[in-house]
Length: 196
Length: 188
Image (cartoon, rainbow over all chains, first blue to last red; front, top):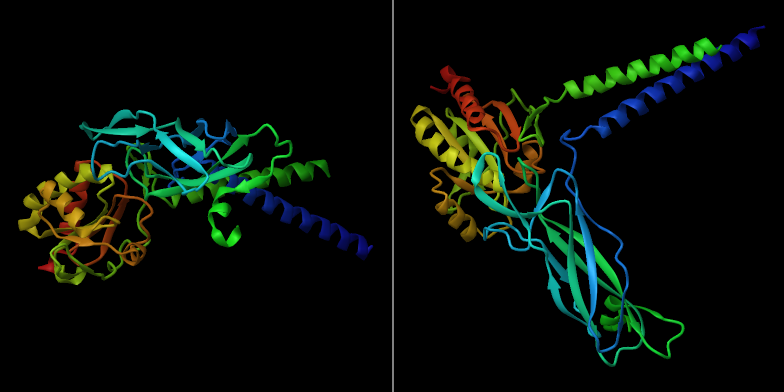
């Protein structure tokens, strides 16, 4: 009899603990779900890019798709003031694949409600940066990964966040008639004499 | 047994709702430009943390140099567009309330060179000291994760409020008046 009561008490306290845990989980989830709660940080993300398939000695185009989180904007590549930090894609120097040209989209003009006369030029939502690459004529066919960073500085309508660097990478597949099994190379590794 | 389970789940939901509103209440929910919150600083009512920073004209400045004055400490950066909107207001307000005992201090939380910061300040006609910020000073004031951040200190040296993000000029002026009136007897 005493054992049964003990079991029942144990079961009840177990349920109580479960109920408290459930309450905490629910409350925490609800708080996290709140937008504009002061903890929401701006972010820029990159969609997984398609590999650029190109023959050695030819030009290939990589289209890098970025997304700025809702409610935020970042300066375009050519903001309207010398003091604003432009969005800039910096790709690591490589020896066997040349980055010929980087093309940024035109930004949207916008102004803040408190100062409609002051124009900013920004990216918001989705935007794409195009990179023209050209493997050297002598490069071995295979897959190469180009690494770099997108530097950006985000704001919302009332505040600005310190500049950030988003790691960026995309693959360049150098096509070659004889190469059936494409070896993987990392351009960063090939560029490092210690790893050659 | 089923009924007991329902009661427990009901209690859990009730507690969750109470926790949610309690947590929300602990931060003031005023929005600026619909994007950021203005939360009272944990230090509100306490003595403003002392700092020592270099000014653009290479002077060493301490917060305590302004003892007895109402001080508006504005954390900003040259790359911050909302900060640029506030600065002309601060210039006007310094002119207007300076004779009554207001001192505005700009703290540049910038990677830009002092020369560039000085050029920016000169272009904006800044008429108050601009200091070269350090992260430790921001941390002492509860952290500066984004800009602008403005802290109002009364004449008695106690923090009145801290605002995150761009605020309207009227709101800034109201806070200045509060800072001027707080501890007026102590400061004079």
